[in-house]
Length: 240
Image (tube, rainbow, N blue to C red; front, side, top):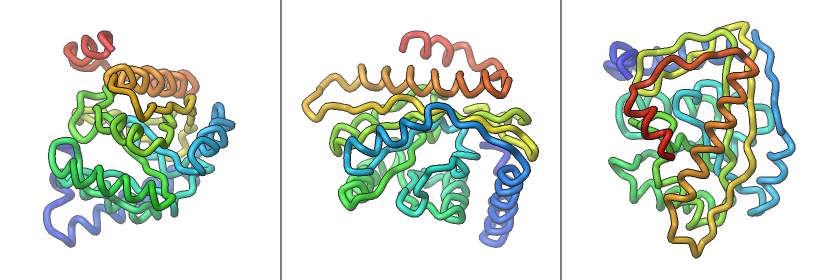
């Protein structure tokens, strides 16, 4: 994300910018209101695999995920890329109390997958942006489905939106929610990927549709209108 570049040069600058961003996010939480739709799906997801859940949210809506009531943050590890932007996000997640696993589908993916499986087998939950770290936006990559198949842990799609926002010029058109915004959280139906399935693409499409539906419902609550995306991304979404 180009908007991070000047904030992430040098260790001292990284810590300062990270502290400022975390404080900003806390301000958004305390000055705004929130609404949760389908909150009963928390319990439904947790009943499937002994309380373990893989929480999925699009990269563009990650900012206020941590503020979702009902999350057991101390028992959740978030996947963050090893890129500069990813390191900044990882440090923020640590400030909010999450564990962090470093890796992505493009670099460190095999080790990250092993680390995530280890966390889940130890009884923890995971938070993943399935279109990260570089997109295409709102199109799930295969890693999430592979993880869910390997562990038997359900994916819980979460749509997030804010009523007062700025849309950043990043690859995902990240939504930056502002203070005094009304936040909407929409939980989708838990998705279980059978351990014997070889049809991973079908489950990728299921995740896409569920997560997009939850995000669109959240946007309808707040009145947020997503700006136009690259036509090629729109075409890829339509094919899913």
